[in-house]
Image (cartoon, rainbow, N blue to C red; front, side):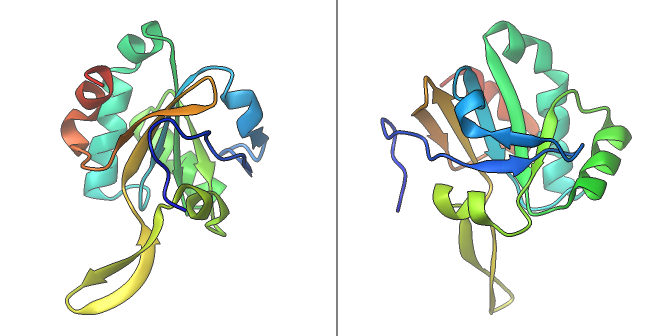
Length: 149
């Protein structure tokens, strides 16, 4: 299933870096930035997270809650959050169940080798509906992409 702008956002449950269960029905009551990224503490993912951190207050004033989600476990998320002082939660998706319903667990290719991995895609969700999908993420200027949407 490929999500499109105007579609109802998929329901999901997962955990954050503290092991607390997070339900989409609770998140969808807010304006939400749900950004899928491949791996904690890699150059592109760090640039993206730090750009969101640096513009967190502006995004918050616009009413957005921010959640990153990757296949990393809670322990890796905690290290990443502490290392870069990230002010938002990171969600775990070790079994790719959330990525599968959002269509972000995809076949990738590197040096001719094919493998499955997380696509870098951001969903802006308002009132439980997909308001915007950012597929060409500029990691070092991602906040501007969100604010310009």
